[in-house]
Length: 284
Length: 284
Image (cartoon, rainbow over all chains, first blue to last red; front, top):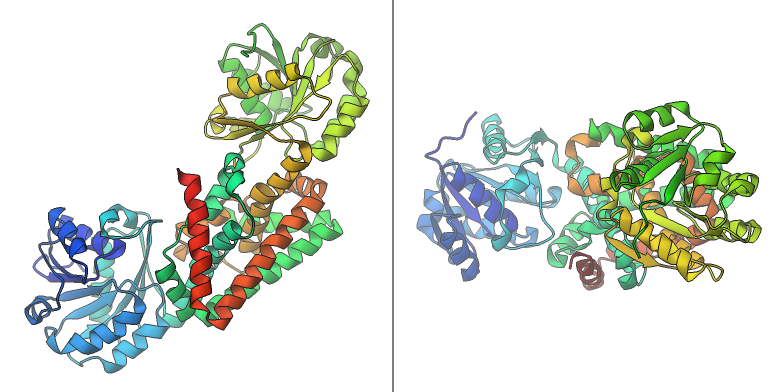
């Protein structure tokens, strides 16, 4: 399925991801409007041609026009926003999002949503170490994963539209996971890795180490530059799954510590062979 | 100080790093010879112009000619090798190495070494996820750190020669650290990060996760492809320092785990702000 170019796109929340979505859609010839409470973000997006129109207030006529609405908001404001304004959406509109955790929002939204509009969750696994619309760049989607996160309530049509959004924006891999499986996976591949990067930076006074860091340390701590408001919220909204993954990791780390303490060379080598074989699969 | 182009260079051990040293020196116009027990490695280096001459046996006339000898051997063979063959070195020769741990080898070597030759340790912090001379590439030194690791017994002249080696090979940053400080630093920035990457790959059956990994997980596990023979040896030779660093990290990880479990948003944010500020220093 290809998205009809006449569909009107509305982006709610013009940060790094909202702005990059806007940029991607606009470059593909879609008419994109945006809502953000920050006037500077709207002005930037207008001035740089990311959007056609932008507003700091939520206006009925803006919502009425949109065929596809993408929410790029913090999770804690997302549900309330939709509750408050859903009355104005166009019948048949499809709502989607970019939120990094799913189970804690998608069911609430679908439960309270008008029956003539549909909410289909999606997670673009892309980002930067900087935030804000001024850092927007739709090229971040190029080698990235786009995950559709449908529930039993989603229609085949909405899932297809959601997939077409990912294709339009140029994601390399598009896949699908139910909300709980998504949150478990994200707890491991994304949230746990951010926790590790943070602890690597904070566990040691490392200012003087800059002169000695090789690529390894740089790679492992790149994501230690983190938007604390967004990530603390994502961590706590996915607390149970994240703690499970952290626990799995720290138990393994303890096992490895004990092997080194005992000087058990063969066991250490076996772990290294296992990690090498598994990691090699990623580079095929 | 600039290295005189007439100095004869001998590389003992033609793996990835030995081969890349040979390539770097040869490109700069030096005459490079090499010794390696593996005939295929010597043949590859000869065929690809990395060296002028190469031998699988240790011959007196080869050692007698060399003004600078670089050892790119596994630590456990390094000390014995020098003990066995030091009688043949040219008076005034300077020996150096590329070994990743220092305190466990440098003192032993300096204690037994002939008085008319000098051993000055160095650590090129560069590498690849693949090993062997056939992967040699002196460009790996370009953005890398080169650490001179002198002891009280080293002369100013040998330290200058060692520095000139780093400059000749094109390292971006050259610095100096005593052996114990070096091993502590390396325990943190290099060995600990490798332990973390390994445990991330082994703590969870992650084959099916390939489809969902973003850059974060890829970055944190790039170094999980590891030469198990070399790294298990390096870990165990630096065991005390490494365990200290692992312990520091896991305590911090436990603290962070507890913050998330308690849902203490302010403390989590404070850690994130700290990690962001520290990591930002790396990107100046």
